[in-house]
Structure formats: structure tokens, C-alpha cells
Image 1: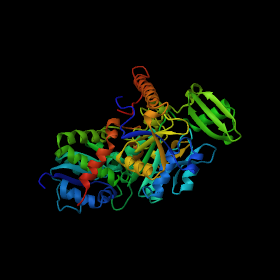
Image 2: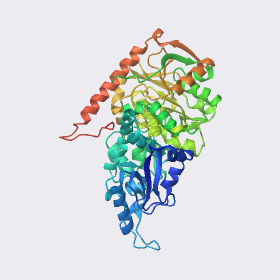
Image 3: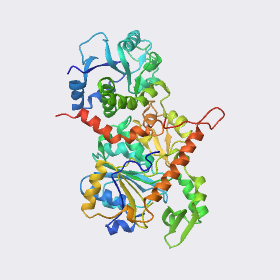
Length: 255
Length: 289
């Protein structure tokens, strides 16, 4: 299909869990690669050495400041990609890499890791550890519509992606603290439990209907805050959940 | 606020024909009967409902997979039940492929956000089979409820058989037959603060939403909203699970629903505006921007 977009998966310091999550869309991944996107770059997946020009770079992992190749790669990615997506907690917020102190063989001096947003501008964030296959799917479909869809689809995709673009300009903390500062302390929490469900490490429990975060367990993936209905919520968009869901399912339908 | 009652395909007054369910229900037994019907007919594998907690009238979200568990979770508890907490758990530990969930309007918003933005909701979006919203003016923290029941109506929490908000009063019915009431205005200061930014009264984002307002005692007003809601509702009615009356033939009718929805949304919109200039040249966060 001539009208495909080009996508690359850029692997910084990460565990490959984000890539596995992309693959966990199962036949959805084939549908994406068949109809919507050509994978033009990806370690072990595409036989390409140098980061090429592409529409969308999905960047997994944080940048190790002591690894000059990584630093160069993320800068090149920004120069070559129209849209840079921070895929997952590490690229978005640092995630578990925030706790790295070096000392690991065979590069014990590799000890400082930053989310990619500290070195380059990021367009879209997909928080979470790992980001869910369905969230990745939704963003890929919307990104495709943004670049190749009809005017209506472009408008819808822009609205859908806006909160994830805003996240890319927002907090770097990405821990339960965000919920405390921006939701609970602001008098906005109504105790729905979304944050507790979203937390991949079960650091959030609901006590008397309100979230309690065990901050020692928190890995700073950003899922709880992004999942909270009182962090961002476009009511007009949400009202369209039925046609949007059908649109995404239709786009992903295999024969 | 063009659409204060949300999108809906039909609105009716209804109650379940299942006497066993109806006996212990808050109003028309709509939520319990719909889930029981959906369980029996393999539309859902289980439903996230407000079950019994460790203190009287303090709900704990549970995943009901039998009619008995659904029956045990009947009646409105006027305090927080973080039902979304179990949404991912339902697909993981419980292995459900088709989930039912009941919740307040804000919880229905959370369900739809989880479907459109499943940031931390792996495998959840395609597994919501029936989301039932309940009308909600506001909710109370548990300690508020204790204060209202034990201090204001002078009843023991464990002695209460049913609580009800309606006709301008907060009513407490006890096991021994007493009825204690306080004016609703006494309750306002005990409300959960997070409710005051809510712009939805009749759970606009449920597949089906229901509540007592608008219908006669013992009946519920039912909005059928989505395609899935329509499908489940029409099958359940055809199977004889509900008796229904057209909304324009019951008192007090849809006008009251409209009136209360307008009051709530107007009040909260004003509060959202006031939040914007809460300080001096500074405001509080608006979650909808």
C-alpha cells in the first residue's frame, strides 16, 4: 500500500518490554505492518544500520549519558523523525532507570539515565510499564489518521492525541506524587480506583475509598496519573467513545 | 450543557419482575437484575459491584460471578466503592473476557477513559461487556456517612437496613422499623470534595444508566444508551425480566430528572469557574482542560 507511514523503533536503555507490548497486539501487528506502517528501523527487526528519515519514531528506553552512541542516536532520531513518541515509562519519565547507580558489568561507569525529553523535544508520550498493547494500537491508528486520514479523521486524531502531547510537556516526576499534587491535593479525587488498577507494581491501594501510594514501591512509570479520569478528560471526545472504539476496531479488523 | 441527560436511545420507567431480587433492592432492582440476566445468558462472565466490606455500610468492590453474590451486593451505599480498582484484576486474576461493571457517573467516565486511553489497563478495553451507570448527585466519605447516621440521625450503623436520598431528605431505615430523617441541606458539608467538579448526573457514559429519580417509589428510571446497552436491555425485557412503563406516563417523570441534572451541572460549572481564580491571581486545576 503506497499510502503507508514510516515507523521506526529506536531502542535506548530499556528492557524491550515496550517492543514486546507492541508485538502483543498479535495479528494487530501484522495488520499495522500490512496496511498502515512500514517498519524502516528497529534492532533485530529491520536490517538497517543507520537511523533513517521516518514519520514516527517510537523510542523505547532512557538515554545513558555515559554512552555517547545513545546520546548521538537520540539526537539523530529527533532530526530524522517527524514525530517522536516516547514509548513507555523509561523514555517518558525515566521509570526504573531513575534508580540506576551504575556498577553493572561490563560497563560499570554507566550510571546516569535520563528520559529522552531531557535531551530532545518529545511530541507524544505513552506512559506505563509496559505501555499496554491497546494503548500502543490506539496511538498508532490515531497517528496514521493524523497523517493520512480525511479532514474529519485528522481532527479527531488531533483531539485524541492532544492529552498525550500535553503529557510530553508536563511533569517529570511520574510517580504517585503526581496524583497527590495534581489530583488529591487539588480536591479532585473521587475515589474511582483507576490509579490502583493501572499501577503495574501494586503500589497503590484504596484506603477508605482513596488511593494510598507506597512510594518505595513506585517505579515512576506514570500510568496512574495518566489513567486518572481527573488528570485529563476531554468530555466531548469521551462522549464519542462508541464511534471511536468502532473506528479503531474497524481499522484493526483482519479478514 | 446542551446534552445534560447524555445520548440515549430510549428512557423508560422499569422494575424487575424477579421478586427475590426486588425484595432487597434499593428501587426497581435494575442493576442486580440486569447483571443476573447477563450472567445467566453468558453476556458477562462476572460483574464488578459494591460488595460487603469490613465495616457496616462500607462497601468493598467485588467481582460477582454468581447470582448469590449479586444479591448480597444489592442496595445503594452512599460512600465510595472504588470499583475501577478491580477492572484490570478482573481480566488477570479472574480471567474474565466479558466484564460487567456498575458505577457512578465519574466511574463510567473512568471506564470509557480506560477504553480510549488504556494507559495502565492492559487487555481491558475490548472486554467491557456491560457498564451500568447510576444517577449520582454526590457521594460521601465513609466517615461522613458515620457522622450523618450516628450523630445526625442518632442510629447505629450496624442497625441500619436501608439508606435513601430523595424528596429533600436523607432517610435511614433501621432493622427494627424506625425511620430517621434529616434535611438534605445538613448533609451538604459532608460531601466528598471531588464530587463538586462533576458535570454528569445521569451517568451519560453507561451502556445503560438508572436511578430512582423520575419514577414512582419502587420503580427506576432507565436510560438505554449504547448499542450494547440496547441489545442487552431489549433481550432482557423480551425474556420477561422487567416490567416497563413509558416515561411520559409516570410521575414525577423526566422533568424532575432534567431539573436535578441542570441544578447539579450548573452548580458545579460555577464551582469550576470559581476554582479558576481561587487564589490571588492564581487558580486551582481544571481537570477538563
